Amino acid sequence: METAVIIGASGGIGGALADALAARGTCVTRLSRRADGLDLTDEASIERVLGKLTAPQELVLVATGVLAADGHRPEKSIRQVTAGALAAQFAVNAIGPMLVLKHALHLLPRDRPSVFAALSARVGSIGDNRLGGWHSYRASKAALNQLIHGAAIELARSHPRACVTCLHPGTVETELTRRFAGGHPTVTPKQAAQALLRVIDGLPPEDTGGFLDWAGEPIPW
Image (cartoon, rainbow, N blue to C red; front, side):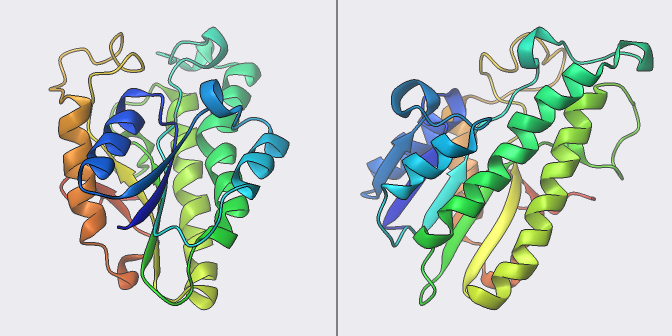
């Protein structure tokens, strides 16, 4: 990749991805709510910030996400589900990345390979859900997967060399996951970034619409 835009570059994974890309000579545009006012819950801010960028961008990656939106912890039972928690998770984890794609279309080249990727999570897999719980987070990531999959079908017609995909980075040692990792093995943001970039580098256009883990293996929907 020669040019890249990282949304959420002030976070652990986003920052590590931006650093890794810059280290290999990529011209990286780092965007975040903190530094640029790009708020995934505010479409006007997304349109304003992305509208200032120039094409082409070979990689646009949304590295944002929330586990405990507005103070709502992941639910352990149905009784803990609230409308507020569901809405907050969907706003950041599903609606926001889709709006980024909407306003990033002008950045993706039509005459060369490009990648639009959004960080999803294995717990968003319906087929792989054997434990239940975490209802809002799971549902928001499943919604993200569906939105990106549907968008990939459309973009295959207008941007035939683009690959649009959802990526699971594994359980990464960040502020987002520290309280909830439990006994799951974790990796550092730097390790996660290196693994994700290996996957991104190997994505052909025919893999568009997929849901892949950090090793490039497909995850069930």
